[in-house]
Amino acid sequence: MRLGNNDPRLICWFLRFLEKIYRIDKKRLRFGLQLFSDKSKTKALKYWCKELDVSAEQFQKVIITKTKKRGTYRKKSETGVLTIYFSNTKLRDSIIRAIKVLQDEDATLAQLVERIHGESR
Image 1 (tube, helix red, strand yellow):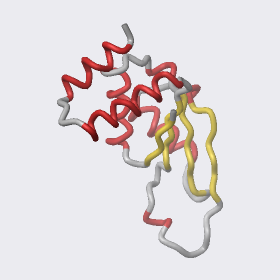
Image 2 (cartoon, helix red, strand yellow; image 1 turned 135 degrees about the vertical axis):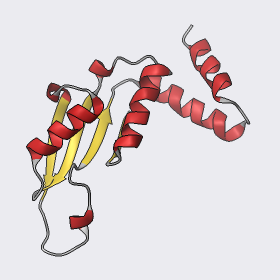
Image 3 (cartoon, rainbow, N blue to C red; image 1 turned 60 degrees about the horizontal axis):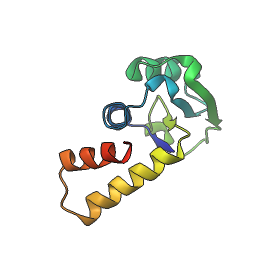
């Protein structure tokens, strides 16, 4: 399972979701980062580690994309696109089922949480 984005609010929300709803230990997560070549890898890693309260050792790879002379990339994030990785098929399937429940039914968050934790018993 993975999620990538450059919005720290979305990433932090997803981490809280995994911790609170699915009881995932943040230390088990791995991260990847994609940056343009004119951005600072050190600065970006430091930013994400602080923002997410995670260790730099949890970062698997940093992909550097060569900067082009023209384009709108210059207005993109200074801190790159962060991807969260968590290798757990059961969790992925549970999240997919939860999304389908929200799409198909008029379920409340409380009902969804009850259903999720009922599955794991």
